[in-house]
Length: 116
Image (cartoon, rainbow, N blue to C red; front, side, top):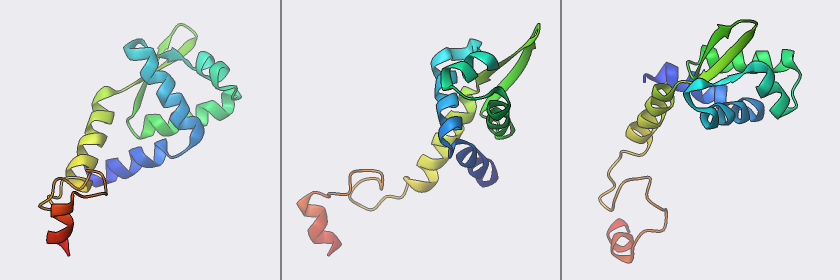
């Protein structure tokens, strides 16, 4: 995943309704959920939900397909895996000499003395 796609994905997930909708789609698995079912579970008006799902769609985090009169949304596992990989590699991958930067902030005593 490149920086532009990463920013787009993070921006799409940076809203309570979109994050909740995405989590529902993760739980639903590859079959996804109809837009109406997502709206019902979130208690969101369909027009508002459509706006939020379009943000996730544009970021490449979900797909949509039509089945009869319903639009089914499903999460894209490769997109989230790419986002996590990018963040891990570019934000946590720096070796401080005392373990990766994503380790807990409280360093062992040996690392504190060498860092001082």
